Length: 483
Image (spheres, rainbow, N blue to C red):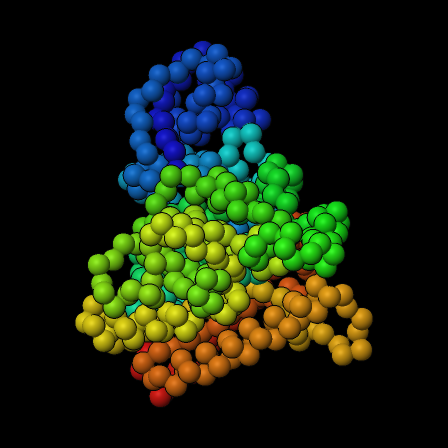
């Protein structure tokens, strides 16, 4: 959030500012000649040659105004920092005799007739329909909050004897649906309670962003930038590249082909730049791990930017640059060229971690067991919240349906990973000290790499992910589980 200014207007310009306020929402006048304005509004006022003096400047975060995020609207979207600054300025202007009103965020594009006293407010000059209201005097706000609807999840997050791990599966651009999970954790005020974030494929990208503290609105903005063409990232091969690749493999003699595995698109640099464009120079503040499949040794490996001096981690966990790790985990086999990472002066070739773990589960469990065995993990319980986004093509396939070779390969791949995930799930759930909660948003009508589906992925995530979590909240706790 930004700056809020308490200002005094030149008496000659009060009427001028008041006239302009309906167009620019420059100032909020509580009483006498004391006004409150956001930094954006102050800059606009200067451009309009309105005379004023700054009496006080404060950070919106330190203003004492606390926005109440109501359920469910606040999980569907969140106001921009500029809009949040506006409501802070308006709230400060409403202070009377030391009593400050409580602003409640209701959501975006909602029907105001269902919310008495609601009004729309965006940042100065903005047109987004963010809905707000002020709490009534004596109103119990606890019952409208996100925390009130998710007490079971909140209890687990704050349990000192439970390790909480967020696991994010792949699914191409559908991983933008996972933003609602980050929004939920933030709304619960529980980001610091997440002990580790794991990701596979596209889930590794979103997981890295969240581990680095990238605001959810910035993550979603990167998706809308792709959708609107403000950022270009080609994720599917052209017909010409497909033809050239097929000719290289089926016509050109083997001795003239390039060695190793190949794919249609070399996306390593493009994906690296895309991740950095959002992440910038932020570094993970939550331990981050991702899964990638090592083609040199033909096994899955755990990649992380963390450095360890633990002998037991050798041949299990490998330290690499965080963006390089996410790119390696996202190198879809056949479609993309594998990612090569130099490790100890040796070129190691990786493909998508979904090859063996569509959603990280068994690797999380193995690491937790190892940490307990060597004494670095003292907590006795493990909770894994696993989010699945990928198409489950195998369940949509009809035996008599005509499909191409590439689609049939994807069906075989999905069948294999589904079977592996099921066996991993059974193994984990046998342990009474572990609780695995899976939530999913299949969106099977959309291609994983269709940029035009991004708004739908974000919007529909509430229907799937949040409803799955609500069912978890409402079901009776399992007596046999330790959590």
